[in-house]
Every structure is written in C-alpha cells, then in structure tokens.
Length: 68
Image (cartoon, rainbow, N blue to C red; front, side, top):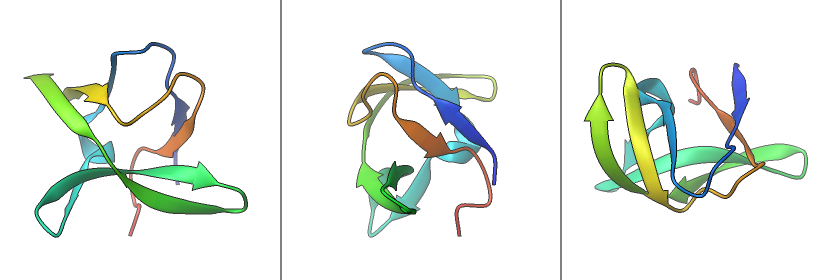
C-alpha cells in the first residue's frame, strides 16, 4: 500500500487513489490504525492526476493504490 500526504488545500492525488463507492468518489484516509473511505469532491483531471477540491486536508495520509 503506497501512501502520500496532501500538501495543499486544493491538491492533486494520483488517479488510482480515487475510488467509487455507492456512486461517490472516495479516498481512503488514515484513521488511527486503519484506513477509512472518505467522500471527496473532485475537480480537474490531467494525465494520472485528479484535483481534490474538498474532503482531503493538508497533511493527511491516504492510500494511493491497492486500497481494497
């Protein structure tokens, strides 16, 4: 499981980090000793990157691939 840390208020994450659950875009974010899905609002897409405009805070660790 690869991890990254968000570093801006509006950030870009690898496209593989964004999953779809029950019709919503989610990113698996570290929550104590586990990773839980969190709904995010996506913006622009470019290449292998997706802009996250809401739902991920600066400094949070998230899963970039193999989240489930």
